[in-house]
Amino acid sequence: MELNQKELKYRRIDCSDISLYVDYRIMFLIELQGDQSPKKEKQLREELTEYFKHAIADKSYIGWIAEYNAKPVGFGGMVIQKIPGHFKYVKGLKGYILNMFTIPEYRRNGISHNILQKLILDGKKLGLNSIYLHATKDGIDLYRKEGFSEPDWPVLELTIES
Image 1 (cartoon, rainbow, N blue to C red):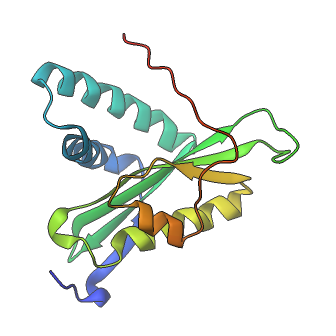
Image 2: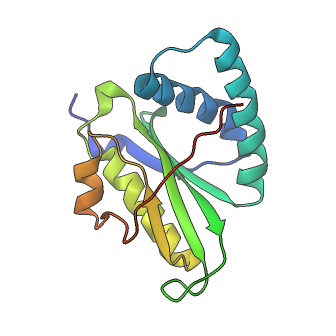
């Protein structure tokens, strides 16, 4: 669907958006990871609600919503992290972009690109040393065009089952 760009508006999320934001994060995760049990979805919904309630209020999470004709159609956010500095990043301020999601029928209209640019600008204003993310196959070209590349050091992960 081609959009009238004049009808596309962007705004920062605030605490009044938490329920909406959780709904679309769940939608994004189901698209990415598949359907889950109702029990697991309920548990995640509760955890996300608590997380966003605190993180939005203390500004450790910033996010954007794209609206088309007043309907939410795209989302993206960034966790602000303070880690011990090192020689490359003395301040130790990092941003982790996640929750980049556009409703399928509104994709290919520059919504994620615009949200990504807003998050990068926010990161610059906050004095972040770096911004990183995990990319889906559909999103990797967008991120590379904005200058994202593989990290200098390999990233390893240990998953701990709870």
